[in-house]
Length: 283
Image 1 (cartoon, helix red, strand yellow):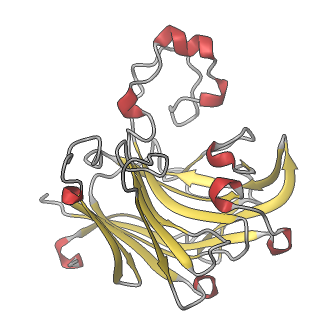
Image 2 (cartoon, one colour; image 1 turned 180 degrees about the vertical axis):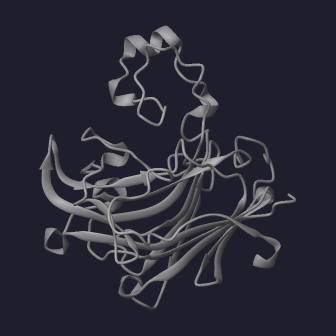
């Protein structure tokens, strides 16, 4: 990967103490049951997310919020900035503790203009799904299959699961290849490291092109998925990564992948020094 082929197009260095830059980031909030049976409520409270000493700090706490026994934060560039292809770099320090599930990932930026006015929306214009009733869904016919998970596609730049202390996960999800589809090989690679990743900051990066997605840690490639890996299908069902996606950073607590929570390890603190995106301008 030659970074000289790219131009820096977007960044956040988190250099101003206080709340996150609202021109760049929005929040996913709620104390409903999130996917994967996660245990947290997501909030926009300063105790769960703020900028301090040059770092974005996402904190998961043991505290009650509605029916949820833990709180955390999930910030995204949804409705603010999306990207199609590029080199994405995050200098971050992951938390330690069983039950923690920090992740940096991407989801597609859909055009929701087809939804009628009566459908509840969030401040960023996206549907507020917990408030949308089955009656409403029947009225507007639901969303097209290609906009649903996993058909829409998901790019997981890096995931760390506290119960797998020295391992990282690099995954892509799509209709043909995902953890719920037992008929095909999932695009998930688990890599073991001989160092304690939570002891220091590391550079987590991804290069995304029309033909492949490759993952790097501190400049070393550890995983690569090629569009041609699926010999039978190289179209949308196996490779929907040809449209704009937005960035997501969060800590989930427990759940199907996070597992049992070691409450003596709380709070979990996920520190991000910077986020930078380069693209090929002439591409």
